[in-house]
Length: 224
Image (cartoon, rainbow, N blue to C red; front, side, top):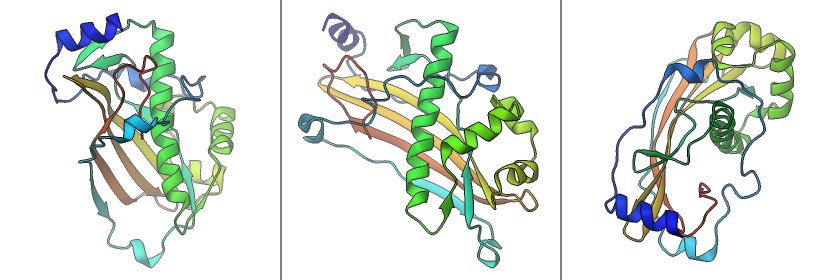
């Protein structure tokens, strides 16, 4: 409770903006132990009293998409472009070691990856299981953003027997507090790439999503 009061006193107004990013994400390892798996996305009844969702999406679809739409999709590991810090109203709190930041960065990225995978799974595509994708990539030493970027979509497509690959980036994953309101700002970019020739089939930016959470919750979970 003392920490929450300090946050409210230090930042009484709701601020917006973009998080600070560095190039550390390029070598941050994939396939780490995730944080707060059991609590992520869960809400209590009071989290639903006021729900704000001004988010949306901007997307682009290739002109030739309908000519040969992909059937089997591989959702590749997402990358968190942030520092892996716990950021409240643009202020990093709860100092973390490099290992902790790496785990939290992977946790944020995989949270969003699973959310997009769940959406794709409800559509006309066949989705390759995420654990199977991770096992194949790890076996070929594709263990961070740099190595994933260096591998061609055609090569990855052969490994996974996929028609298209989905790449994703977490742009924002931040907490905001103002008076008695608490929210998370989450923004992600995704793109779908053909494994036949590497051209982009679809791209999308999920605009900032604010969702109310209980300020007294010490777990600081993200509420979907």
